[in-house]
Structures are given as C-alpha cells and as structure tokens.
Image 1 (cartoon, rainbow, N blue to C red):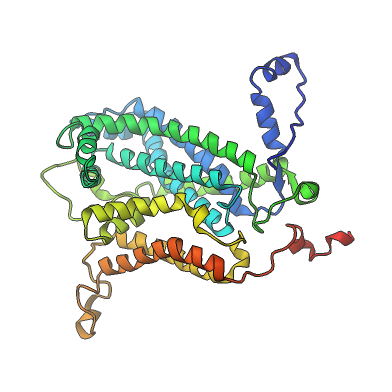
Image 2 (image 1 turned 60 degrees about the vertical axis):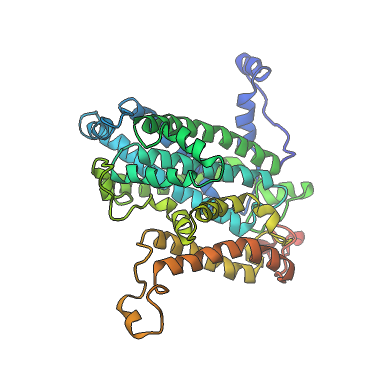
Length: 431
C-alpha cells in the first residue's frame, strides 16, 4: 500500500492549477482510493471516530474560550455563566466535557486493538510511536482542561500533580516554579494552564497529520497480521472508498448515539460532584481523584511508597508503550495465532480495569471488608494499596518480561499465506 500510485486526473483548469502548486485534492483522492485490506473489522473504525472527536473538541473548545475567564476570582463563575446565560452554552460545555471521555474511550480501544493485532511491528513502528505521542499529549491536555473550571477537584488535582514535578531531582523545582508561575497555585498558574490547554489540541492535530502520513507510507495492518505483497494487492485489497467510508460512517453514527446519551441524559455521570464546589485552598477534599481515564496511572503513582519512584513508575507506564515495537520478539503479529499470549492479554485487560478501580478507591480501604477479621490476612495487606501494587507489577511484567520471553518460547498456530485464505479455506487458487 505504501507503493500506491496516484490515479487522480485533474479535470478543470482550476484543479490543474492547484494540483501543480498544492496537490491537496490529489492527496484526498489518493487516500480515498488507497488499497485497503479487505478483512478489516469494526475495530479498525476507531481511527475515524478519533478524528471526529478531535474536531469536536477543537470546535467546542474555541467557542468556550470566547466566554471563559482565566482568573481565579472569576473562572468558576464564568463556567456557570456559560451554563446559564450563553445561548446553547450548556450544550457546548457538556459536549466538550463528555467529549474528552469519549475521546479516551476511543483511543484506549484503538490502542488495545493495535496491541492485540501487533500493529506496532515493522514496518509500522513510526505509526505506533506517533500514536503514543498523541496519547501523551491527550493526557496533558485533559489534565490542563480539568483545572480550568476551578472547582475543588480542579484546584487540588493541580496541587497534587504539580507537586509531583517538584520531586524530580535537579530540574524539578525550577520547572515547578515555571509551570505554576510562582511558589503556589494561583492566578498565574490558571493563565498558563489555559494557554497550554488551548494550544495543545492544535499540536495534537499536527501529530495526527504525521500519523496519517506514516500510515500512508507504512500501510495498514490487518486482523491476520501479514504483509500484502504487490502481486496480491488486487486480490486482498479494496479501495478505501466506498467500502470502508461506509463502514466507518456506520460506526461513527453508533458512537454519536452513545455520545448523545451521555450529553443529554447523563452529562455529569463521568465527572466528580466536588468540582461543582468553588476551589478553596483552605479545605482539602476527603478524596482527591482525577478523571476516570487517568485513574490507572494515578493508581500506579500511589502504588509506589517513594514519591519520586511513583513519578517514575507513572511516566514509565506510558513510556514503555514507546518501546513496545522492540519488546515484542515474536515473528507473528496477530494474537489470533498466539493462544498463550492471548491468555496473558486477557489478564492484562483485567489488570487495566483493576488499576482504574483501585485508583478511584481510598488506598487504605479494606478490599474484603469484615472478612479480614477472621482470616490470616493482615489488615494492611488486605487493602487496595496492595492490590494496586499487584496490578502494577503485572502491568510492567506484561511488557518487560512476558512479551520478550513469550515471543521466543511460544509456538504460534499456523499463519495463513494470505488474508483471503481464512475465508476461502485455502482454495482460492481453484477459483
């Protein structure tokens, strides 16, 4: 697919003039006719869904920025004004707030699909790395946006996370002062966070363009996980349009229905009630938690007793994704043909959900409750903290131990010679 020749022919004088100077129409036409593996399933539709989410977040964010006041004395009131006095403001804000959650739902599913089908393997390493960059920028953007409403969770979340930066040796303190704009979180901090939150979505958009460029060069993976040779392009691929534009369109409609359910019926279900209380530096909430999509990493942070060690583990949980193409030693991409690895992948999914659950709990809360009173389990061991440490250990073992080791030791199932073979039963040559 990376060798796909252009079939676009300019028809009008304007098209010819533009094509010789800025071939943007040619790029779009070539992308629509790009040979695409014909066995792609609905897990491949999340790329289009993510593009839509990014556009929604940018458009609604620009509108909200017209009315938001990045001042500690007026930020909370400006958000309430958007909700109550701006025409359609409640809708724009709910779409933006829930859009962040929809964005992360789609990106997590997109990344898990890539992990399961081995989409990070050569020659697609750069596609995966750019995707990880987008994911990291999304986390940074979401954190900065969470601070802007200036509620209790906004303020104390910023207090907790920025303090972590100060734990970094040598550079931590200067970076912390620069980020806050002073020794404490105040008006300068809110202005900085607002500026960065407004800027980063456009940076994400730029990296998405690079991501698509790399995809156009490296080609798409497929559920079978095999490369399509030139001589089989006509048999194993179909044009992206209309076959996959229709498929993506249907998936986008279903996704928008889910999106609308949260916006119109459950607008605050994914948020925290304490963020509807104005920020008060003198009153600490009983339980400080980030948004749900950051809970697994927050749990990893709390699992390490040392502050700096927790910061390293939290960023390491993201950083390990960048080197994933070199950690997996298996010559087989898709876990369809790796039954042992597939079992550990299912456990990995359970661990990720478990980390999210533990991140939302008090670390010293009992897991088994009163059951611990008549067992041999010590009260300190029977807590979410130790369960979190167990999950954290497996998270890193999965990437740093299981992937390299199983890739060398596991005996995979026979991989088909082409993507048509699983459908046609190997008899395609008889057709």
